[in-house]
Image (tube, rainbow, N blue to C red; front, top):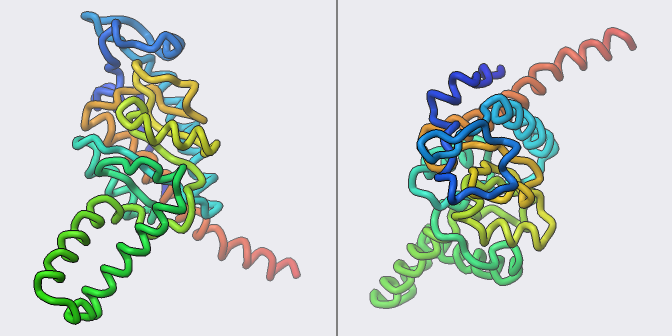
Amino acid sequence: MFMPFPTEKDLIKSACHFGHAKHKWNPKMAPYLYAIQKGIHIFDLTQTHAKLKEVCAELQELYDAGKVILFVSTKQQSITAVESIGKHLNQPIVTSKWIPGLMTNWNTIKKRLKVYKDLQESFKSGDITKYTKKEQTMLRKKLAKLDIALSGVAHMTSTPDAIFVVDAVHNNVAVREALTLKIPVYGICDSNANPDDFTNFVPANDDAVKSIEIILNTVEEHLLGGKTKKKAETPEEEETLVSSS
């Protein structure tokens, strides 16, 4: 079942309309801005609303096709929402420091993932007891570091089919890697970001907690709703085929 799409009033209540100070803007964002108030750029929420629908539709097409979408944001105020979307959509996430080469140097990252999984299995199976207490302590510390860096992408078997970035300026390395590999980039594009870096984007505030949450929650609910709707329609379609045969 689809959740109601947020209205423009909902977007205002969530502070989606606030951009950055006018001197920090990227001129390419001019078409998506409505005005300047007290030196701050204000987004045209009619366009924000329309673009949110577009982004949800494109991401849903990828998600329904079984594609992998990597959700990226190392901003503290976004972690809860990104973790939620990763858990409920079963998609990889990055919420701690971006590992340089995560996509462009995937073969090396894949080896680190194997080390990480092997260590996890050693502790889980009890095989770790074959090491001395000092070695176990060192391995436990190593596992803790790897867990922080790699837990969100532990189940990735290849580079993602697309990425969603909350703040393209803050996580510009992730964007650059995706562009290098021609991986589609989706996300929130604030007034200081370059819209040309995106395949499609939501022009909105990427700093306020409420703004980030309403956008990510809408994406999550829309993708989950689409899959639920598809499952619900399948029995009816099968019944129709049986009846007509």
